[in-house]
Amino acid sequence: AQSVTQPDIHITVSEGASLELRCNYSYGATPYLFWYVQSPGQGLQLLLKYFSGDTLVQGIKGFEAEFKRSQSSFNLRKPSVHWSDAAEYFCAVGRYGGSQGNLIFGKGTKLSVKP
Amino acid sequence: DAGVIQSPRHEVTEMGQEVTLRCKPISGHNSLFWYRQTMMRGLELLIYFNNNVPIDDSGMPEDRFSAKMPNASFSTLKIQPSEPRDSAVYFCAIQFQGRVTGELFFGEGSRLTVL
Image: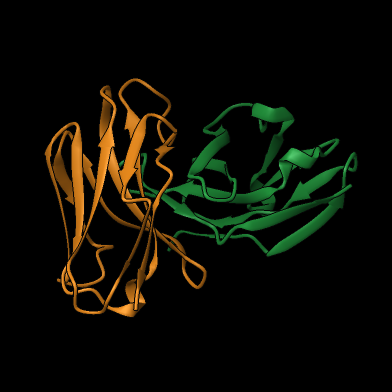
């Protein structure tokens, strides 16, 4: 069965420090992979996506993610975190056999940023 | 996101009462999704529609849940009768025609508390 695992429930980093959020997926074919961000009291917003091609994808707000098939991973990175990046981050995989907008989400990683 | 308006934003009700959540998406979408978010289970897809037709309702927990989409600009999710375990944030999301598949636009959610 398809699944997404985000091993870290909560991460705290200092403002200006680098960030890496981990995501591992289970999928039988080439996956469609996504990272979404959710600010408190808000809906989710797409940060970036991977379908095929270059395994390093760029997104909005200075985020990037790298698809590593051998590790079944799609980790999210940012070189320098800003206080406004404090939010919850969700990794998602496209669900096989359904609408391509039909996604399976991980449980999320909450990011706190220290001044 | 102004593209998806959900109401009510917050609702508190008593067990056994009927609850109706509403979603008004802007035009141009071809798919509409209802997700439920809880601390324990994360984001779960309840049902989705393509061109106003329900495609997959396998995520609807029980017969107490029903969803309709009478036209492209309106959808409802109804719970009758409600139970405390239905307490969650319910999100409506859309996918636009011609946009990247899997790129969902979420409303701000309806937070439901069943006492």
